[in-house]
Image (cartoon, rainbow over all chains, first blue to last red; front, side):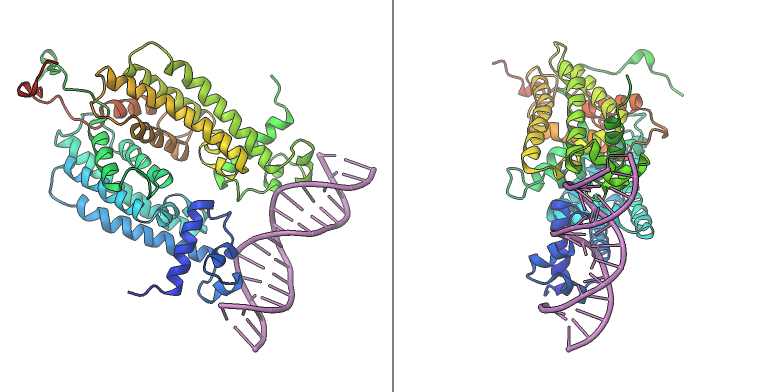
Amino acid sequence: MVETRRQQIENAASVLFRERGYAATSVRDIAQVLNLQGASLYAHVASKEDLLWSIVERAADRFEAAVAPIAAAESPAPQRLRAMTGAHIRVVTGDLGNAVSFLDEWRFLSPERRTAVAARRRRYERRFREVIRDGVEAGDFARGTDPRLTATWMLSALNGIAVWYRPDGELDPESIADRYADLFLSGLSGPPRPPAIDFDRRTDP
Amino acid sequence: MVETRRQQIENAASVLFRERGYAATSVRDIAQVLNLQGASLYAHVASKEDLLWSIVERAADRFEAAVAPIAAAESPAPQRLRAMTGAHIRVVTGDLGNAVSFLDEWRFLSPERRTAVAARRRRYERRFREVIRDGVEAGDFARGTDPRLTATWMLSALNGIAVWYRPDGELDPESIADRYADLFLSGLSGPPRPPAIDFDRRTDP
DNA sequence: CCTACCGATCGGTAGG
DNA sequence: CCTACCGATCGGTAGG
């Protein structure tokens, strides 16, 4: 598949949006990457915000496409959550500019578009929440776990990767995914501890 | 203690830097909050960047003052990590504008200042890393835990709070701190499982 | 896709 | 702390 000019522009823009932020990136900066005059961009793009909008929508599509099928699967919650962690990390590390635009820069969209993105983000987060809820109900996760706060906790850690990840770094996405999944599921909990079941408190409802 | 004009300006600026980002905040925006003319700010401030610099330095001081003594204490690693989690969260939620400026907006500083902040951030992160290392060595945390990646993981989740926390929301900082500390230390690990000690693999060195 | 150009706004200064 | 103002840069348009 050939990359259209429009695609090239979006890609260049997303890289700059990640590096400098949307507000600090000028249309002339974007044009320069492609050896164009600033005004020439407007042959392909209606506005700077329109560019951000396209990038954000594409990123949202990718996150959903990667995670939704896993969330909807039949497997046990811990297994699904582990797979969702890997899928999310692969999307983030696969296109950092896109990911950061969706995760951080979307707030520079117009109010209407911002509302639309906020809804997609909520829907996405809800998938994590629901799997966590499933896991609590099935007894896989600790009783009393708050699905909402826990999903936020997970996604914050996950989204942070978009900021520090370097493609030429030591850790490849799969290693990060494995370790993060371990941490989410078991935390820092140490070696197997002595029997922890409190028989005295056991009651049958 | 009276709040100096300079302090008022810094506070107004930090609120706007969080809401709109440094690049999208004009000096006239800041002045307007205090019912001043844009140019009048320069009676108190050398430059817009200087304002960001002051805010970032103050935030860095606060994080260090809150966390360093705990990290250096004698108590067991899990206990220290729990206390550091609470301290960090209290600093973040206590002044969101300051925190976001230190955590996100510092990249708009001049190269020299950015380098200085990067060093402080590394030093801060190292305290978490060292406590994690201590915990692994003492057998409190799972063998094979990577202190570097795990500290990054923790701090990403912790710093995300600066983005979603609302002072008028349901969760107060202490509740968040308790739950986050539980999640960091135990993850989502469910109810006590059947004895997991693998006697076959036991060897005495 | 370029040249030429627009009004608006930016951070900041001069002089009081 | 204000008025008046500066050059630079911004997103974007006209016309080819």
